Length: 394
Image (cartoon, rainbow, N blue to C red; front, side, top):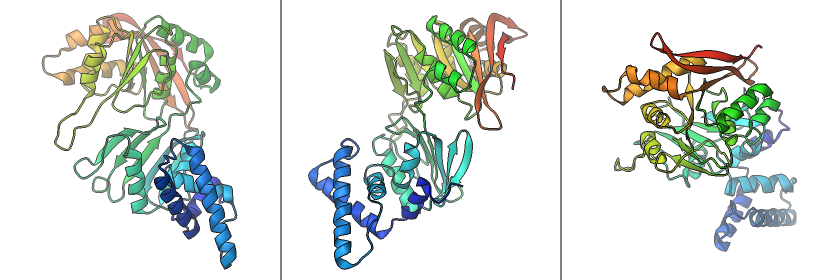
């Protein structure tokens, strides 16, 4: 639990909306609307109006003998979070040490720091949670309702939002916000964080620049997406990278990169854009490297076909080890249809996937590259042969 003197505690005292802050926030919202100011784009104007309204409130309170707002700066921050951000959750989204925020219920809010979960003293209401989700989804073009009870979306800062509504959950909406911290965007930064040794990072960087195809495997929260983003950043400046994701997560600032995102069907059931379609479209965009954020279904076949046409690739996959990742990658293309045969898939993987980087999270919450395996290009006993070139020793 965080101490009650922490920023989270300050939020918890106003999460249900104390009258002074709520009144100030409402006046600031009205003035912003009247002046046509968008506080998400013009934060300085929003802060100026909020500060003016806090002082106006205090002047009126002193004249009437009412309670004043003592901490002007804190109130301004809370008001801005209410009118421009995500209310009581905004301090955690702004905190660079917080990796993830999730709500199991309006009064059960958790965060993760350094891979460790902790509950924070925030008490919301059902309507507040629904309003926050609606605000988060406003600019994404996605929705959540009875007909679409799950939603995945990217927030403007690159964080990933996942929501499941009541009826699918036992009662309350379940909300997860997974942040992607800018601290770890290069392999050198992951070396500094102790995720992998420098010689391994050098080898992986050279492999990316040389056009080798790399599969990143691991469990949930093992650091797969972070590793994939760092690998993409190692591509040579002249290499054109096309990324394909269900929801934007790879916040990579490369010289020549285009990100593609899938789309859910409309209310009429039309307009869906699945990953398989995106992979095919990506191949028409002159890629020097094709990246699939996560391979989990029949799109594995389209990725494999792309790799076998000479386009280097990179992707993540859920697996328990590097070799299990190769086995799973050989099984997923079979979901594409009955005419897909392992006799084609396994040799294709052996010929086109060069390295597997397996990530894991230890008991303390720290993430490591625990194994790097290199394929030999051979198929032995109907499986892709691979040799371990690095193994982490705790």
